[in-house]
Image (tube, rainbow, N blue to C red; front, side):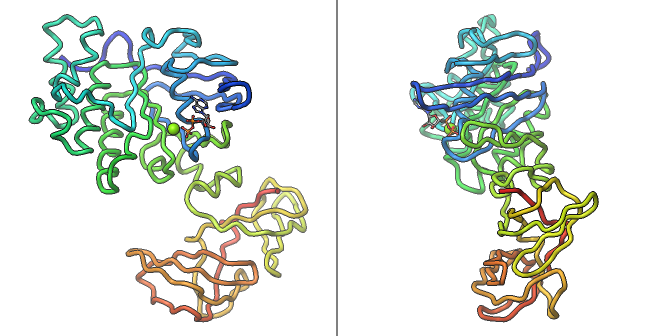
Length: 359
Ligand SMILES: Nc1ncnc2c1ncn2[C@@H]1O[C@H](COP(=O)(O)OP(=O)(O)O)[C@@H](O)[C@H]1O
Ligand SMILES: [Mg+2]
């Protein structure tokens, strides 16, 4: 018996103009529209309180919707009770039953799934083997590590073969090393089984690592939707430029805009940048720390500065450099010579890596 295919294959989730209020005044989710294509892993990413959990809970039917519609494939499920939705959720807290063994935990939902009784142990065992824990079937949750408990929670959700699988910050309680391996396992299973997964995290690195598509949320609204690469390379919004990866954000003045180039003045220097959607006047310039380089001689496209701090973090060294444009955060490969605090340095900034945003 295999976990797929079955009658309800992975499905598409669609939000159309969905709003959720708590009480009269708290707009938790503000008129969002989105699509999670069948068989893809889409991440809701944003700071705490931006509406991620609320969005997931609306898919599961654990929260009602004030305005708009939610669809699973073509079916409008906006008002369908949670128990009738073919959706499973994995929580940050694992939420395992402490007095049931691992295998009993995994089998739990199967008793209510309509599966014939004799098939339940087989199915549960199969779920456990998907997450590599067959050998721990008879243990209790308290006898497992955090990572193992979370794998059991994943197996428990997987055996139900939901049309949509939801993860709410599933790695938050794990240490850094485990977070990486469990996230890779989740991604592998999702791809192997062709699951539709909606994954919530506030950790941008985790989002970049696991997602087909990322939906960045800010204050209940969608700031940008794109592939990890698009969001990192072409943020269309200052919030996204700042939230995904790290950026230096500098005050600047746009002095001329043509079809081909934008002329920008920053820190007393003029840069000519390939065309971007921007208006003349005061603006913000974003540049990533890895797009600033150290040079011995003064550069036309750059600033001279003085090193305020140098932090060796293994493969990279992170510097703070005081310049006329402000304090710049610079990341340099540690294979380069380490520079001391107070050293004078010339920086090169690549104009085609600069992103401009109107205030
Ligand atoms: N049950 C609730 N009652 C009232 N306000 C809530 C409730 N749940 C969440 N909120 C509020 O809704 C907003 C979005 O919360 P949430 O969806 O949990 O955000 P996230 O998961 O991104 O941290 C926050 O302002 C939060 O305080
Ligand atoms: Mg949350």
